[in-house]
Image (cartoon, rainbow, N blue to C red; front, side, top):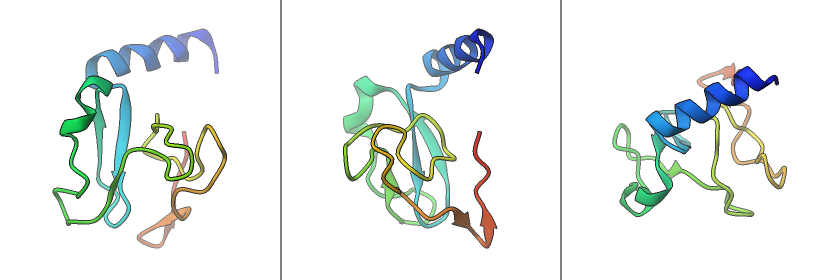
Length: 90
């Protein structure tokens, strides 16, 4: 990606949150700031499923709601399908 997309990504993080968490059951997502990670719930407020905010293997945070494999270690974090459709990555 070019410099413009890197700039946009950084601006989005400053305003909306540094990282992304997503529900393994319903796919709901929310952004979070690193300094407020302790306030993030472990359970999805929508459906009660697991709200995953870090890779179970290496503990790296997620930068995209469409993550299927960890960006740091490459381990799968969820199936590449939600509600019968493939997850479209950025």
